[in-house]
Length: 358
Image (cartoon, rainbow, N blue to C red; front, side, top):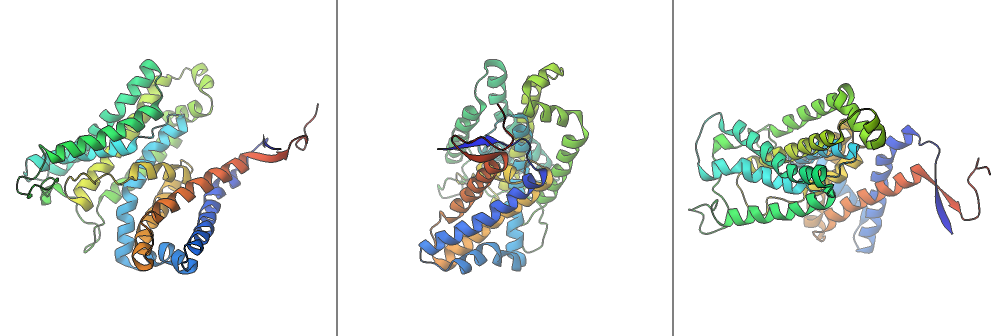
């Protein structure tokens, strides 16, 4: 029999090296998968991870994909550090898009104030959706994993109902979509001739603010202590319910803002297919980035690269559409597996780990 024995101390260098190892293992496993599918693994890996970086347009598309992943990942990192497991960022993303996009969908007014109002509405919408699991956990000790996850499906269905009904474009030939947002309700373009928008700069700003909160503010210390030892947090006088609320409000607000950016950016309207899984992929981004702002920035680009490269591989090599999801799953599986080996040593039953006594 084989058992796992906890290591006395995990190397910090190994802790930050494991995401790199996870990426390398994903590439290796992906190559084996392509070989089994009868495809050239070298060509497939090159198309996914190298080719998108050689063209300005595909780089801009990576920025488009990375923007919501970075925003949502930053928000989730606060809760994950504190032991608050918000798995429903996809629902908060959807509600943010819905609330933020309702104004231009119903009233196509113009003015410089439209976008700020949309962004504020999206943040409030995401926070309101996250307030439901926050209230249920702090008041009734409900499991936020289940509540946030189930609310995701409610949010997606709510978007579908409204786009098929009150928000449907009256001149849209009965298609389930809102009217196209006017220029005042769309994000300014960052790189001319592409879809990359200024939302990316907001994501970088959010990353800087998150770094300051986590490393230079008492709230970051409270998050760290609560995540490592809730009892120590109680003895230290920290109000745990307050930390739960703040973590969920931050993650919900940033997810809602990401949803507004998606509606006002590359999509340009509200459609039932607007939620495409960014909220779930951002969970991988947060852990691949080691729950640190800088790590999440790089992880967001890596995952965005799999989106763009995966789509290119589907077209050029006639691969199934699930290839992107498989790669993202490999990332998470590899990372979790390496984390286990970094924190535990494998021992055979009947043998004591080195240094054990008694």
